Amino acid sequence: MGIDTLLKIGIWAVPVLFSIVIHEVSHGWVAHRLGDRTAKSMGRLTLNPVPHIDPVGTIILPLIMIIMGGPVFGWAKPVPFNPYQFRQDVDIKRGTMLVALSGPLSNFTIAFGASFLFIFAQKFLSWLPALLYISLLQLAQALIFINLILGSFNLIPIPPLDGSKVIMGLLPDKLVPHYLMLERYGFLIIVILLATGAFSGIIMGPVRFLYKVFTIIPAFLANLV
Figure 1: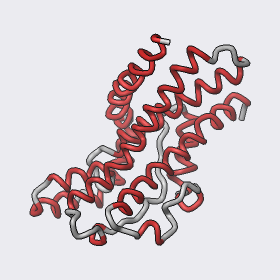
Figure 2: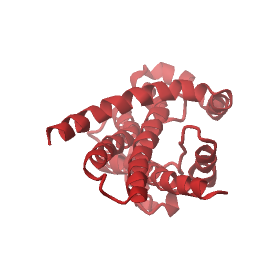
Figure 3: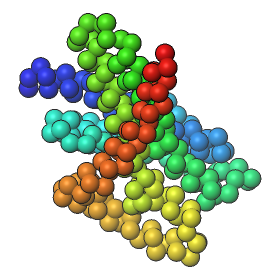
């Protein structure tokens, strides 16, 4: 394995791990705010990555995707929550939707913040040593793309992805059990999407669009300075 590959892994692996952990902790944090202490009692409201690591989703798959040059994404152990532990004033369906949306929203927030780092580094930090400057730009860009991919991927309405919980919150109660029947095929559907390359087609279009949208504001502000 060459130096370039090792450098690429280093620049992308840390943002992947960081972004996945933030995604899962966001689920637990919102559930906790709504009254459910499940995640906290299990020690999952922590930024320490160790309790969240899934060997396949957090390590093996992202490394393979980095080396192969494909869209980089992954997953951690899901942070558990119990909607029946929400406060009495919280509607279960609405609360579940908020918990589900918190993960992708955390990723989009990180991507938006990283877009400022990327644009401002381009304009104001070119005086840095070349290797440090390029590495900083690549790190910021990795944070943007990884989080846009994670956020967009998790909004796909395939159970058990976050998007499915949003859909269930919008469906009439009598249709939810029928929709949940998809869950037994969810992982297979995701594997097929990956194997056929359909994943890139579904995800990368929105990701490229969001990338342009997210960099408009920092680019505008940088030009004012």
